[in-house]
Figure 1 (cartoon, helix red, strand yellow):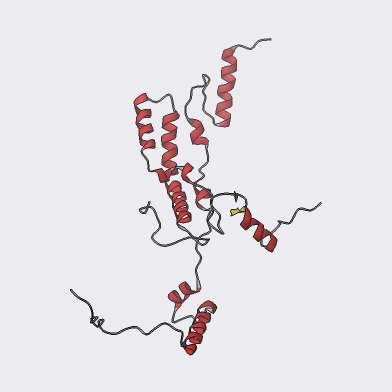
Figure 2 (tube, chains in turn brown, green):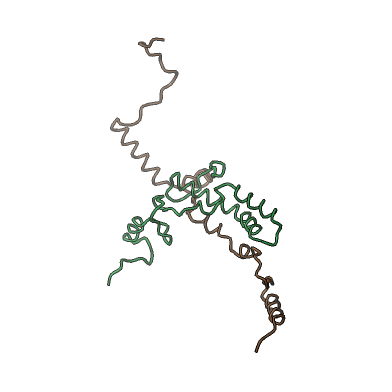
Length: 106
Length: 113
């Protein structure tokens, strides 16, 4: 039993209407597959973990209002104190312009 | 390229120049993805006049290389490496082994039978 082509086309048309697809019986390339693709940009851009607020940021924002402590910073100060006691800390900042070196010829 | 790069560092993982570059590329691609897909649609649509399609082709090929998805490469978030990165954990195989043996990856355990 053969079904006439016109009838089959009618069926296809109805199918397209029901499922909201484009009616394209000749199979012409309309580029619709590009439109059907999902955007993958947001997923790709979220690959690396973003920077979170640090204790320094909190201090900068709420400095006078909120009192908090920074363990790493305190450890650093302690270490510097230790160095100073041993006389191994950084030299003092110089004041005024550098004195001209004597043995330099122009 | 520097014009795309964020003015302030916005990465929370291991940072090196290549990681920053890859991150920038990802953000630029996300920004231009809709435009690229529109151009791709015009190029693939054979019912449009050939001239339109040719100009779309030119436009797409002349977009900045950072807007291309093929420029993006997964990198290790622990060490910034670009090779041997396990996609599910975003880590190189060695970093994955270290983290797994330290018990930092939930659900991962050593195979034994």
